[in-house]
Image (tube, rainbow, N blue to C red):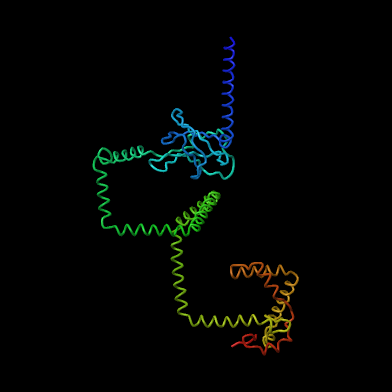
Length: 388
């Protein structure tokens, strides 16, 4: 009984010692290994060439290792330990990288951390954010499929591919230099576009702004298009009248040209004389005292007065009535003058022109007789009463 109790105590002591040793081992592992790394799991659609102990890199720099590769149904879970001092973006991807055909592969975490949330401990990267390289057998299968599809049992069943290659060879025969020149010019074009990419992008941006403006002004553009269509339709409907008008204008211009050619000397003389007269009229105001000079003076010969006294009396009375009417009712006088001009010419003067004209003249009974001696000394072009 005593021996049994001693054996039981010994067993308990050994068991307790083992538990303490296990706890101590776990604590040591956590202090020296677990505390310095974080656990990350990633799911791949396949993990060929990936083994426990393979490295985990960021930008080619080792930051951890693979702990286990575990099948998980149609996917493979890869457990990794990553140095805690290295920040990994929370949305990082995991990519299996094959440095060469025969070497072991490793997992690359990308992109590099530049800011924002970081990946926490026990984080999981889903299969949608993982990628694996294409395998040689997959490449061979793809090449075999292409060769089969283009072979005698595929696209070339009736010799179509062979005919295409024969035709291409015939077309390219003797055109090697032309093909070379084309490629060279395309290369130069690419260089030119690259050298002027700022201007090219600016042009594209301006076209985009123009398109946006036109889209924002769609109603106005439609209205303008409709108005242009209306104008075009009107011109099309009146093309006969337009043709007659243009024809008549051409005939009139021909007649004007013939008239000018036949009367060139007379027209030149008239233009010269007109320039002289207009200059005299422009300078007229500066020739007289206070800038005033009579433009119309009623003068009769003594013989005419003796022979026709009633006529002279009527002329003087008409002059008196006109001056009195203008001084008492200037607006009425302007209207009467304008009505008479309209009867004579068929068109009345604008009111502004009429007001300006009346502001430059003064109807008076004073003939400014004191200026008559000076009038007799003025040039013939200004002297009144001179007749041939």
